[in-house]
Image (cartoon, rainbow, N blue to C red; front, side, top):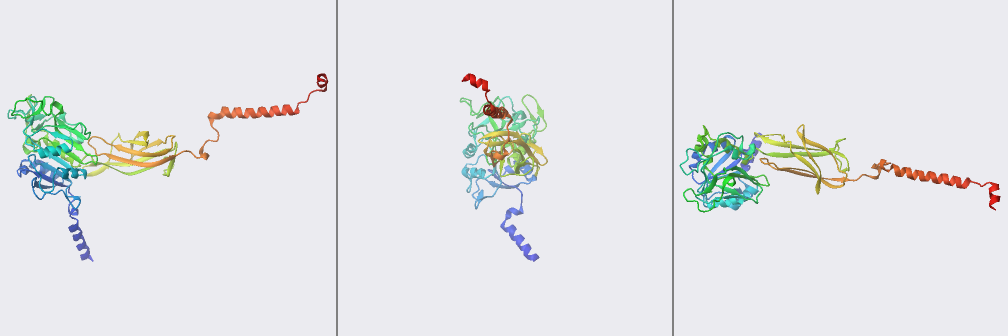
Length: 437
């Protein structure tokens, strides 16, 4: 018996290899094997946080993102800015299908960016500048710049105001050398994670500026992001050097003379990867329930003006553990085409709850929670319930506002009784009757 159980266990792990490892599988595509050495600190930090990295050349003929309709990886990293064509079955369409299936993508470009990487970036709402161009800033460059002012020292003030995405902002500048990009104005999902200063522009540093640059000033994006409607996340960086060991450990000194012993790159790239790969900023919603506030029972339908309590469990992933979410701006809407009630949910033990009175309008309503904040995954819930009018036995016997009408009715009846009594029992005197004759 014990032997059969052992055999079944071994067979189950053979047939289901995913049970052998719970580590998030990440495919890293490179165009040169030396990138594993020049970016070793960044890759080591991912391994230390539990990621299973698989390195392959971007042109490898055996590349495949899915098998038998299932994706083989949770995350995809493309550190191959010069690749002209992906190998195997991987192409731009396959990568967008990977994102549509819930996979996360991180792309690092460079001034030698290929048309393939530009096409991929365009699919997620970002337009990279042409090959051989760089972001140039004659005011905010690093002292170790070669003279073209393309090694930028970007202030942390240019980062998005979201600690979940970029971590805690430090005084140390971020070193950047790469291509510029602009966001698609028609795509509301694109995030400006890090932009250049107002004195920057994107152009070929070896050519005279004759045309209007592709990107100018703060509209020049250095790092952009996107969270799809299915909560898949994408990071597009115009600089692969930003992730390198040299930039992570380098000291900085700006053109204005402000120096720092270490750049802010290490904290930034760690936070970017943690957000992109769903380590942080992840919410989940469960255990939705609602009932009458007075007796805790959930009827099939509510009656107008009932006092109702709505409860839901919202949790946040923090350091690999699900903890109660402490957001104070989560709203509940009680909707029938338009919201009739909108109220904030408040912490109640491990749940978030709110009490409200059902409006004096009957019909089919929905309890709706739609929480969409920068840095967090979107949570959305809709629970349908009917609201009926009062039954005839539930109305008040006498309505206070109708008392004047009640009084007029009874006074009319009393007047008729008195008039009838007087009319029937009144008799004229004999003397008056003779006079009338």
